[in-house]
Image 1 (cartoon, rainbow, N blue to C red):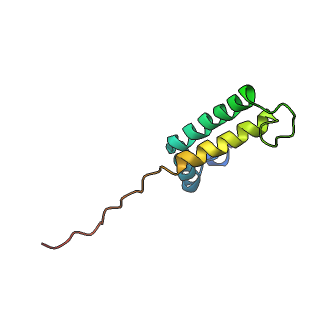
Image 2: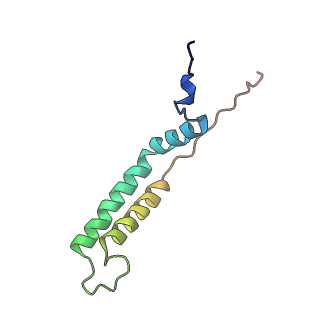
Image 3: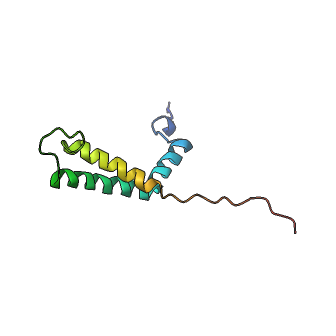
Length: 94
């Protein structure tokens, strides 16, 4: 007797919603560039300027300044998004 095992039981195929979310994340290159550039700028600010007394909330710790820079960089470049123009799918009668 031969037992046939379906492959679909062992392979996880992502749903279309998961694929659309992943596609949207990777298509937003400006946002990711802003996050990385902001994180680098935040760490550079900590490294070169910093806080000598240790009482500064953001610049006294490299993790805080890097996270704050990443947040600000992402927000800055997210404001420059173009609005998508949608074409009307119905044809107008001439």
